[in-house]
Image (cartoon, rainbow, N blue to C red):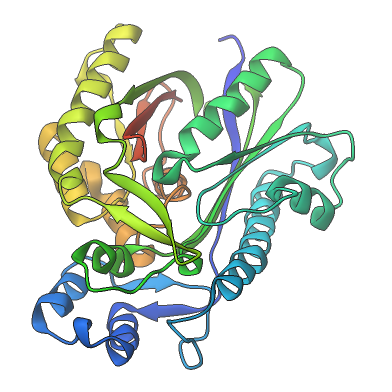
Length: 349
């Protein structure tokens, strides 16, 4: 088998602060009268989320912080857990940091200039001739465009390796008002980072990247994302997304499989973004999947919540560790985010 661009290593990280869903609900309800009713509590406690990692101390946090405080949280937290995820990624594979030729950083929950890549290079002492790219504003779907940029780099330079890191500090962009839109965001979003190294490989235990597919729905561009309000990022999350995501994903997967000449039953592993309980339910229904085929997505949601862009890579790590894909098997990674954008990649072992 000829060498193909593949994922040589993966590592993840979260802030050390881990809170139960009950603790997080009680924190917000303590400050906001709007949250002190059974309907809002139901949203939190019926989310299929048990725990989330958030980059703050729950005993001292002020939910009405100033924008500058939120920015500092993003800067400190994003750099810290991004570096941790990269270090774990490299440690598990034995890849030397000096062998990394390109760094791609994906994030949507804060803005830095110089970008995250520059801070990562400084903190980790990476080579100063390394190529870099910062991808912003791609939301929960961002890992897959980032992976495609890494794939493109390795295809262009087969002897080189690319590092992709996705990192979000959703606790730096919470917004409290009297809308169910922000309630849902505050009930499911969390902090995390994931890193992968992409390089040419023939190894049977490494997922090779065969193809990508994107589907955009510009008519829904205002349905999900962030808006700037009072100097803060306020989530936009239309309730319609959970109902239409599955149907759009079905179209995307059909297009990808047709392009590659494969039937749906040839897919052994479904690596789906844990966008929320109803999003997973919709994907399961439209893609005709079993409970077993979405178990890793549900497990990541339960233990971590929706971390935006890193989430699908957490599901990939869970799949590699728990399902141990075998040579000859195939998988589809799928995530969706602002745009409205759906992104997918076809993997093989």
